[in-house]
Amino acid sequence: MDEKEQLERQRVVDIAKTYLRTPYHHEGRIRGAGIDCGMLLLNIFEEAGLIPHLALGVDIPHYPPDWALHRDDPRYLSWVERYAGKVDRLPLPGDIVLHQYGRGISHGGLVIEWPLIIHSYRGLGVVYADAEKEFLDKKSESRQRGIYSFWG
View 1 (spheres, rainbow, N blue to C red):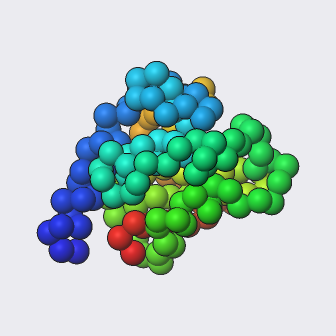
View 2 (cartoon, rainbow, N blue to C red):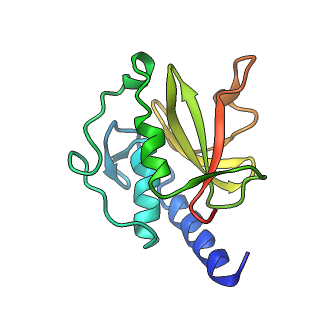
């Protein structure tokens, strides 16, 4: 990893931490007021200057809170894949871990230092979680569906 990438990754992690304790709000994008897991990731990478601003309803179509439970449409995954690719290695700070709930990938968190992530979850808001031990993987099979990275 070169110095530029290291600095970008650290900036992404530092920005993510500023969202801690923000309440969960479906389609919300306001630090301290309300945000969901997808908008959290977009905001972090936008604030870091790594992706352009994406507008809900324009670049990101409206999505019902339970769409992944009833549809195979890979909306969440397609948003992530605009700027990040799947990697087959241990997650690094600033990478994204995706999880499946329902019929498709519908949840993501930002890696702080594996397995510690920051994510926004209904009823919890923006919190730290252990991606290997906490509720994200409480069933017998893992809900984890891959690690994605802006840096490749």
